[in-house]
Image (tube, rainbow over all chains, first blue to last red; front, side):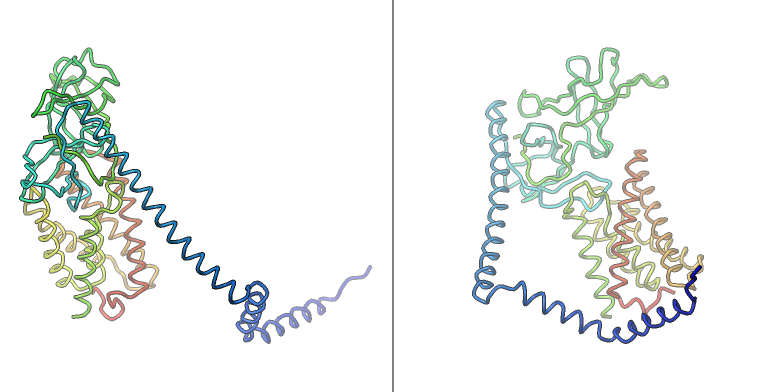
Length: 241
Length: 160
């Protein structure tokens, strides 16, 4: 039986090592050579490359224009929805833009670009384009105002649960809950929660009951709320005047 | 001096990020806190204390219900970071030092979350966990980036 000598493998390994060591300093040169060759093979003539470059630039500018148009379409749709809601509910709305947030992840307060100059008052409610409650005005300055969102721990508003009961809505960052609900026996999961606007008799939808439990140590029921306005990124909203 | 200007600029940008919130409330991270932790772990105690006090004060001016804790919160966190850094031995391999610093940063983030939960009078374990994870990831990413760029001349001025 023929058995190959171990020396043979040692020689082969040494040769490979020698080749590798010899060619190692030329690695960059070989790489450049290969890249140059491939570029020479694939590159189009100078005139064609100029045309391609111009087309690429045009393509980028068109893509940017399309994005801008898409943003405008979205904004237009939001404004149209808000206008429809205003017409339907016969409300007087004032559009506002978000300019800043409170620098804390544990508070839900935003700064708006309108204030006393647009007759904004403390306690006015803010809604999104679908008519869902977002929060209420906390503080008004000359040309800006602070809006406390419904899920802020300091937010409170008296609300109704269908026509079955009422209580005080309080935020808890994750969502909200209704405090001081006395007669919760008839309240079910999914019941609609709404509030009356201070200025008119119209109602605003807030959310739905997500959980209800009777606390044995308390007179009141624990009602958890799933808010309708669940968007975490705001750009514009509407204040009910 | 140049290093201090850079620290000021960095913390100012982080404060702006906190007020602009480019990701809205989807990202539950206090960027300024991460900056304060970073300078506490990489700069001298007096420098980090001065900056944490200045930026704690600037931040508190933007918050509605300001109290003493809001102003000195970052200074307390800075002190805790320095205490832990002197308590834990960071002399040794670079990898070990980075590990210890990241551990201290996570501890500081947990303390900050605890303070916020007590102040907000809510108990939200899921939100606390999300905040801890997001803050830790952002801290590790930003600190490794700053160390790699040697943005604050970290090699020339050690924390201790």
